[in-house]
Amino acid sequence: MTTADLLPVTLLTGFLGSGKTTLLNQLLRREPLTAVVMNEFGEIGLDHQLLEDTRGPLALLSGGCVCCQVQGSLGPTLKNLYMARGGTLPAYRRVIIETTGIADPAPILDVLLNDRWIAARHRMDGVITTVDCAHARQQLDAYSEARRQVAVADRLLLTKTDQATPEARAALENRLASLNPAAPRHIVTHGAIDPALILDVGLFNARDKHADVEQWLAHARYRPVARGALGGKARPQPADGHDGRIRAFSLSFDEPLDWDGLAAALEMLQAFRAENLLRMKAIVHVAGKDAPVVLHAVQHVLYPPAELREWPDDDRRSRFVFITADLEEGFVRRLLEDFTRAAAGKPASPALA
Image 1 (spheres, rainbow, N blue to C red):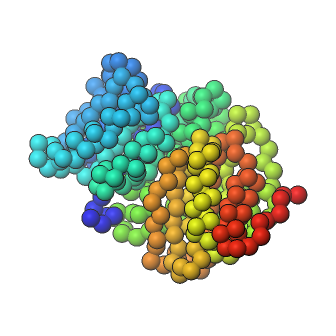
Image 2 (cartoon, rainbow, N blue to C red):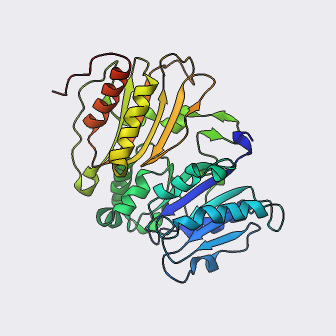
């Protein structure tokens, strides 16, 4: 089964009342052959009753947050849906998982990527986060879940823009850009949006059958922390209230990196600081390889490395983008440098001045 044959899975998240179900209804009108997995916090689920008719199956996970108490039921639910697909259920073409408003997306990605049976038949297409322009600033102040939902998103959808003043909306957009510089932002009115803007947005575009690495990585949109063969001094980032804990930055390396050293560094980062690693994306020039290797991680979940057929442009640097919480840029840079240098038989880099 090729990548293009895998069923795309979209994770739809966003804080309470931000318009996820309204958006989902609109999407199902345009993409009716969609399997929907909904999660609601509490003993009795109600949101699924708000969904309009769909030709695809609906599975409800109730009694807890999909990222915690009922995480164990997500895998079996996806397996049961897939096994009945084209038989007792319609031959749906994609899956949308709508989380409760207080969910952390990372454990859901863990199921999708680390369950071999599911990963062999599905591909994680993207994380879509709805943002309530009328209340998001207060929510981002008060709830770490809201900040994490924004930080890991591939697309940010701005809802209720008519309920926010131009000044408040501009301040919110600046804040979103600080939390997640790479994610495109789209305005959604009453849930209406072109599905092409938020579906098939992952590294491998199922329609075009090619790897759009530059758009996916969006390296230039992140604040550079290091550049060059060994990197340079990190530029300090001023704290901005709660958001000072979340940092978005990029690292680049001119010299090819030793694969064993890089793998060891990432394993250590995930083993000891997984909760702080909200997201990592990279295109890497591995020593001894002509083609680049693409890496992607969310907290303790590391996607399998993907080797591309060729570089997307003339830039052969290794480029990393990180979104972290309570994790210093300098620590990440030194970790990558020291492990790759040690594996290549070179002395460790000096400490930052």
